[in-house]
Length: 261
Ligand SMILES: *[C@@H]1O[C@H](CO)[C@@H](O)[C@H](O)[C@H]1NC(C)=O
Ligand SMILES: *[C@@H]1O[C@H](CO)[C@@H](O)[C@H](O)[C@H]1NC(C)=O
Ligand SMILES: *[C@@H]1O[C@H](CO)[C@@H](O)[C@H](O)[C@H]1NC(C)=O
Ligand SMILES: *[C@@H]1O[C@H](CO)[C@@H](O)[C@H](O)[C@H]1NC(C)=O
Image 1 (tube, rainbow, N blue to C red):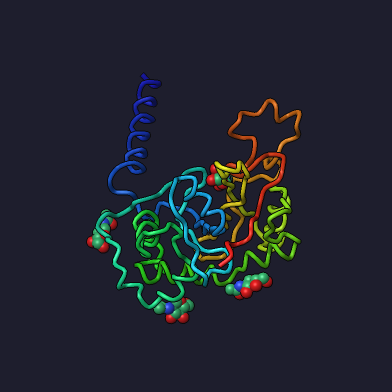
Image 2: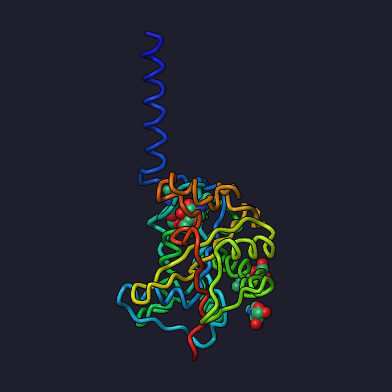
């Protein structure tokens, strides 16, 4: 009897929590930190070329640009698409147009310049609403640009000798250490493989912020888990071989220069 009532209690609790997470109304305060994702334009083009699409990097782009600012819960890709009623309206962020064009462009050729902003607003901006400093399009986009302005990733990598190159390749661990040194916090990043050349490129760099928009360690990363000794590696499931998504566990990657313009 005792066991049964405990079981019922647990089952009911799980039902309620999963409804909160997956139901139509996502609790908008339901995130723990913010993830600022940056693109390296050349690697972003690898993505579009892999998809059979054209890519265009505006000449004004000189370095890392914004992918998005994502309200996040550690270990998940949630929350997302928090409020269908908050439709994207470009007019609300028109005052930011110059900054957006240089720091937050979409590289897919032939699509509307607002495409990435609309996607980022709908998927992530609507989930930041519980934080007053990020409420509404203007605050959300402006604060994201402000965070991006405070950090020069190109410079941070260069300070550790990591410069865009057509020849030299870099170990993911060296990129991790350069970022950790320059940012002062634990970063995350991703790689992408060019289907044609089979070369792996550094693609995105993710930096984490708390709800006061102060830099913080990206959660869930233990330095010891980043890479594994080759002997131990054999026993690891494929998914845990490299902490950095799609980056090789051993071996180096390209940080290829921007397209010549
Ligand atoms: C969704 O956004 C609309 C428009 O801003 C607002 O009126 C509504 O209260 C929001 N819904 C929820 C569940 O927060
Ligand atoms: C963007 O944020 C900055 C810093 O908080 C502020 O000075 C500026 O007025 C904001 N811009 C707009 C268009 O709201
Ligand atoms: C970032 O740093 C690089 C390398 O030092 C420099 O060339 C570039 O102008 C800087 N970008 C901005 C926006 O200050
Ligand atoms: C680090 O980024 C990779 C790439 O998306 C992701 O799979 C992984 O979950 C991230 N790790 C943490 C702790 O956020």
